[in-house]
Image 1 (cartoon, rainbow, N blue to C red):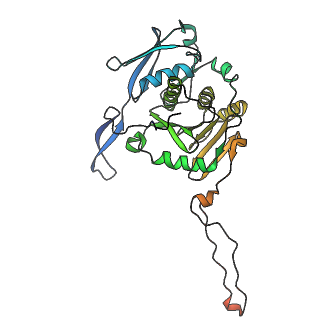
Image 2 (spheres, one colour):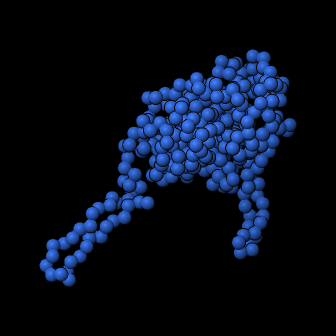
Image 3 (cartoon, one colour):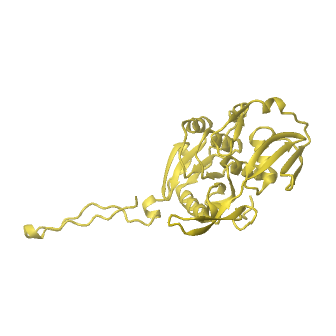
Length: 305
């Protein structure tokens, strides 16, 4: 995999707008807000979906969406991906002739932002995926990743109201995508993986969103064995992770986290207290007694919360 980091460009004027409002004191303020724009996806002449997106990396979004919905099969040859910014359209053409009229009539609205959808046959292919059981996640990598990701330049830090997903290798972020809907950010990474033929069997996937069934399904479809979020879980997301053998880690903030599936991949090589710079807690010390009034209890140092 390429070492160069692909990440958001918060300075891209197409992705945000400046607006004027007032603050809690009634004073005028300027603020950056993210842009939403429609993007209609066609596969071989058939309209598939219109989605709301921030607008960057439309080709990756289109290919990733089709791959994650099983409309673009692993052995499909992609002939062309064409984006027309004026028409707000992206067209994917494959060597295989496709017709998904029946499939488009049967879809499930997901809990993702911007009305994500999944299709019924996704579960069939989901059950066929075998994730790499030899992949490992060192806690030192996890702590380093959360620190880097939270401080990298991003649309979130500039304007908020956006989700991010990051494909990582060990303690290095490799691909960082953002969008108004977390499923869009996932699909952008899936599209990049597909178009650049990236190996995913030993990678770590980080998301700012909730660990829902949709997030688990898409991570497994990409062949990524480890999924991490700073947010929480849904019950179905946990069940699916356990069924598939996915390592599922949530509430990853600072040097804390909670793993609810695939714990065997985690290597505890870093002390959370030492990593955070906190002194370990010690038992109170008592000096030898000389007179009753001179007894002093030692001071207990406080560890990180």
